[in-house]
Image 1 (cartoon, helix red, strand yellow):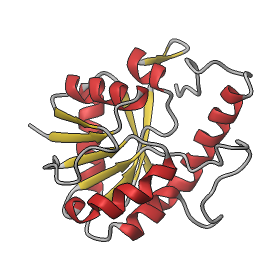
Image 2 (image 1 turned 180 degrees about the vertical axis):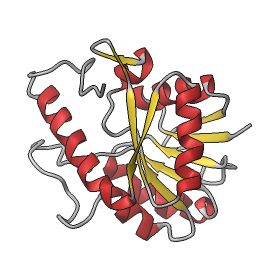
Image 3 (image 1 turned 45 degrees about the vertical axis):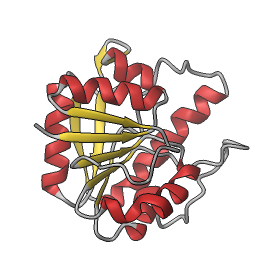
Image 4 (image 1 turned 30 degrees about the vertical axis):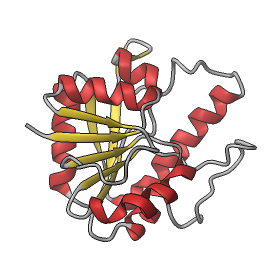
Length: 190
């Protein structure tokens, strides 16, 4: 059985917890302010807004060594919703990987809203979780949990593809914040 620690108890953390639990993982839910001395599972999901990542890494980063860290963030400017906050040739995932050189960092769940993860569908189509990263074993392990949990997992390529995934997430969040689509909707893949 895979042990998964999810940092973040909001809608995304809860929805991801449900899917991965259905997929056979043992889940540990931690608030972003919980003790930095917690024992972490084999997979750590960062289910917090991107601005919270820096302090989490500063407080707990050493404990992430040897773990698979799943970045679900979209590094957008939450004041204006009009831009990403990472360099144009980078991604939140790449920045997190630089800060956690002894961990395996992959990107997943950032193109999904919590409602579509929980429901397992987007407009009648099975929810697809796009996963990017350089470690095939880590992507495969997460993909297996996602699939066993009732969603579709799609390998979106190497870590460098995280930038494009963040662009998709950014567009989807911008549309929902502008009330052009519902927070219960999103992009579906047939």
